[in-house]
Length: 329
Image (cartoon, rainbow, N blue to C red):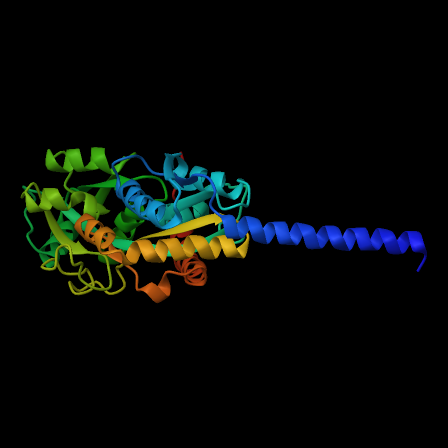
């Protein structure tokens, strides 16, 4: 090798070593400034509440603030896009759920692939959806409800929330599984749907359980069944829809945490460690249990588990979403 080429190659090799060392140093020093957690859902909702509790716990574990930023719209896919296109340094992370990482991507024309263009961090928690009725509705049990909606001459009004959301799929799935005679009434958010259900303006809805539980406890609406595989600890006397004679009628409103693809593995590991420590913290667990969410077992709070779970949910639900012929706004 000529002397000039040898020296040039040596310089390139030395630069690579130095840059690699600097990358390791940066990962070891992470985080050195505040982290932004992007949420695609409005303040006051279940995702926002979960985000703020987890962010507060992660702050204590990481030694830096974790600031929740709301970027709502398009079933949370706009916020997810913000994470996809951020710098791959671990300073932008995103909290998402079934709507943003399963239902929304099946409907919207996105410039990213939700499975290929994100780096999973951790599977966080889940809470069920449940079938609700206004206080004055005639049925009192799930079996009575199914008979009632099937036998009506006039359709029961059924509030749905958000295009491509788990709540909307819940209503569509309920109709198909039970042959219910219902007329869907679309709402932009759970808040207006809850208000109209309490006021008796609609007959039924399918909503995330944690946000509507206070109204059920106050007797302002009826809860007929949860759409989960097992009963929900937040309302253990409410049966599952499967128990009520409708096999397969379940949908999980789960949440996870992602960051930008290409983020260094030591940084991802640091974030995952902070999440696991947060979810194991008794103070945080008490807050989350009060919120009504169910925390996943610690061995499932990993990047690989979240990646596999997200893919399995897409494989299960995309055919259902597309067959429903839901129109985006």
